[in-house]
Length: 115
Image (cartoon, rainbow, N blue to C red; front, side, top):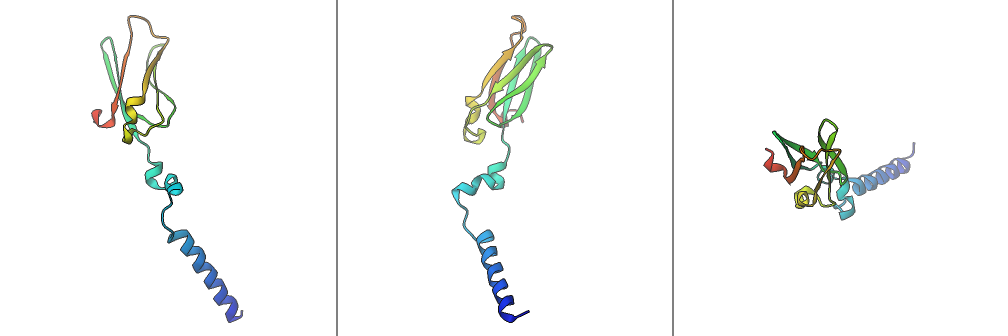
């Protein structure tokens, strides 16, 4: 193997390593960082008759089931804002197939409330 081939391969490897590891963090690469991928939670409290359920619910920006009482299902519709940025206040509680006497009350607060 020629010395120039070895030197050229080394130079290319160095450039690739520099661009992969030494480049500054771009705003578009934030989603790939650990912070950007961390799952965040809100505390959902469901009160119904004699039951109180506190549950950590992960934020995925979707509708999540929280608990159920027989056929009665309690869910939350999540907002687009991360919980760490005050997004828990955007969540709305919903019920499905619940009787009038069961009437669950849903409140959503920051995750620290459940701790």
